[in-house]
Image 1 (cartoon, rainbow over the protein chains, first blue to last red):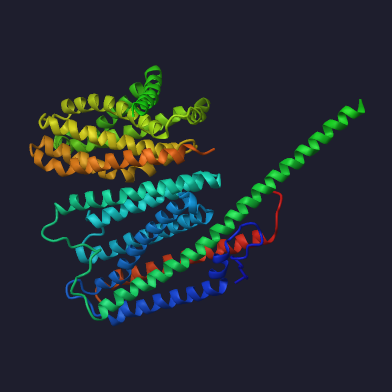
Image 2: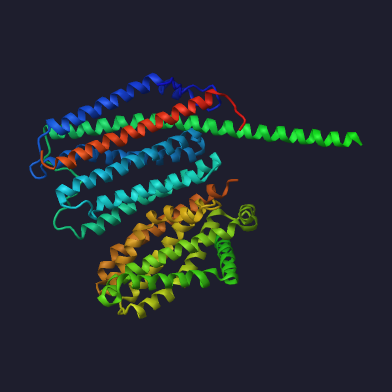
Length: 273
Length: 225
Length: 43
């Protein structure tokens, strides 16, 4: 793999001092290794060590990935919102918060989509169908769409300043909606449940022993994976913004050069006469 | 406060006057709503007695789709002839601009909903009852839609692909309104008006939330190049 | 293992998605590093 010095700041894509000290290639690679190992151990725990569930059987093993990815999906959204707030607040305004918000949003899409997919794979053996209109599924689907809208908005705006500000506002406005969505859907769907809510998001409170261990490990492993991917994506964003700037500068320089030539030619024309 | 109200009416009045002269909502959006109701009848076969049962959902779907057009239109008129710059330079309170925009959209939507609902009562063969809840829930839902729409219309405003971007941004956000409005109408039409109250609360919370957000967000939103 | 097809599909899906995303970011990072390393280029 070529030496990707993602954190060097010699090109105007200024990555701040803290970032270049913390997010070094060495640290990131170590984090990546930890993430992979963590997931491998999780697979071992979830697929082999933990016993099958009393009621759900082996399908329950999907919970060890499904629940952590769901948690990461929500965490990513929270990070996006917090970073957006930091960007909008004048005292902490800095382009890096915008980059963090965007990076976390992309990860949020990945984790939330994965959550839905895993939930569907769990639902077929346990409920008999790939999809039901359970509150938790519906709200997760809405969350996914909120993310997609945020990313679509970003893609439509070329100017970095406008893009940062508008998407930050969009993130916060969407975040305010999440509790309303959650409660209204929860209330809606709970009316149609017989008895207590049994859904994929909540684990049996009697879970213990190796099952609990596997689940807890899952939170940790997914958390590390999220952090690693976020760091990589964040650095990439900084680099790509630097390239954007560079291209803009180049385009401006080009135009200036053209203008000078035009002026010189016009001047010459007047001279000849 | 009086100054704010005056500015709000100024902005709303401007939008409505433009509408009255161009008649886009009247000539295009209203027929669109009617068409949607017609198409639902094609899709759902009136003979199977399904239509009256799903009428509230269909109504609010039609309103939502029409609202997307109305909101889009509300911000399209701002991109012509440097109107956006005009708004910014006018030193109007940004919150007033927001409320004015939202008020204009509410007015247009209500003007849409009344003929649409009447048409639906007739053509889908509905029994009219629970009028109080029907009216209250419609007012609340429309206000919520307009406030959220004014926020997202401005966020997506000035961008070339506003037509496809706005629905993607707005629809997930207003899902609770759709839900609550439909359930309220079902309760009203079904004679179980007590069931509507929690949904009325949801819509009230939503409307207040987005009214507040809009007032806050329009300041930073308008101040850009 | 009962329902093994669902369980293994799910776990495989998780691995595939996460690794694919990681590789995508890595590839774009390499491309960006090269682009930055080359210095200002008139287009």
